[in-house]
Image (cartoon, rainbow, N blue to C red; front, top):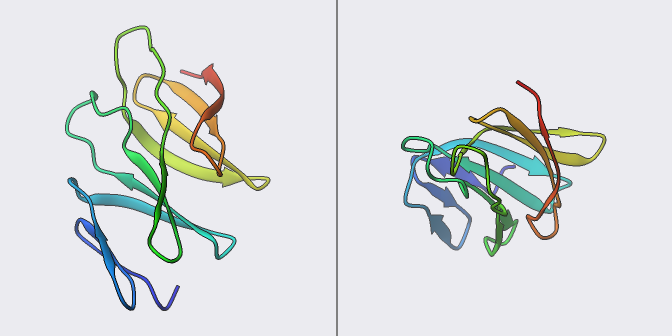
Length: 111
């Protein structure tokens, strides 16, 4: 998107910016409405390292958390399929994420 720039830990809009604690690893623009951001995670313990911003720069949500067999596990990748958002976790789970709330809709161990 022309009016948004990503730099290190910041998402820069025309009239504002949003800064995160960690470096931005991956971004995804969805339907010109949402910007989904995956932050680089230090270790596996940051299990809420995916955020969603409106295109105006408002934080809409952080990914939901749940209990995993070996403790917290950060997201290592995100993708869209059939207009649905999915996240991979380091611990081997794939999750479908609600785009409007960030809640985990389903979770499956895939590796």
